[in-house]
Length: 320
Image 1 (tube, rainbow, N blue to C red):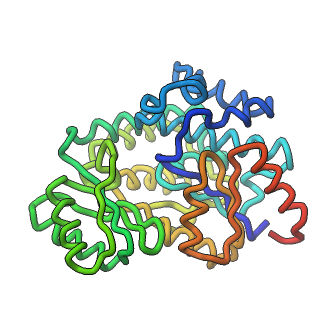
Image 2: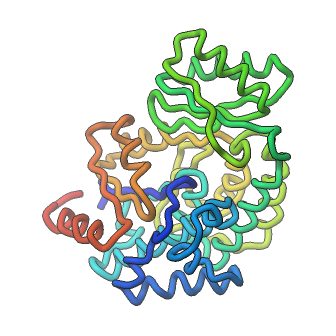
């Protein structure tokens, strides 16, 4: 289906109960959560379904949990409709969602993906001392305005970079706290609608994350990566690849690099993608893409009801 891409959400979409309805409805889904639990040596599924949201939101838990839900959704889709990642033109994921995309496309085993995300979560959390880093959202800004704000932020001597280009008018900065504060002041003084600090545990996707990138380089060196069944559109390049060596390097580089989500969606649309299916928790990417390309059909695959609606759409379309 050349017009379909599967997309996978990143951190922030977690919630208690995530994936439970899928596990209750589909035996194939239960095995996903059991395999992740075994790989981590932790009853993560119990935390996801009956635990404390503060504990689930810890980066080391949220990352593998979100991946498990995404892969579970894809397994459920295959059980209900016979569709899999191989039926899409591309897969793409936002930040940690890139791991979910690769697992769903057969590039990395489920157990390895879970272990990698536990390492990634711990490494990202531990890369910067509490209070030294910050992130801020610039609402209504374009990339040029965000870049100018970063220049002002770096004038303090600290790190200040665009971490996420999520959608037109929705950019996120990351770096040293004083630099981010200065960048926000510059943005507000130069026509940006709103500059607001984000409640995050660390300054993700900037050079302060280099220790985490080093940890991921070591972890990924011991993991088998295969060519995915369809190309993955990478965060760091907004371009497709199926080369395992390139995928490995992209996963290292994305820890400190910009999530180029706007460009990733634009690339897929330019290649004929007309519909996306967001596998996993929430609908953040589906909502964001409306700001990027209004013509895209967006579906979510987080619950049995979502799967039913998407399957009905697929069956009613000669070409997706």
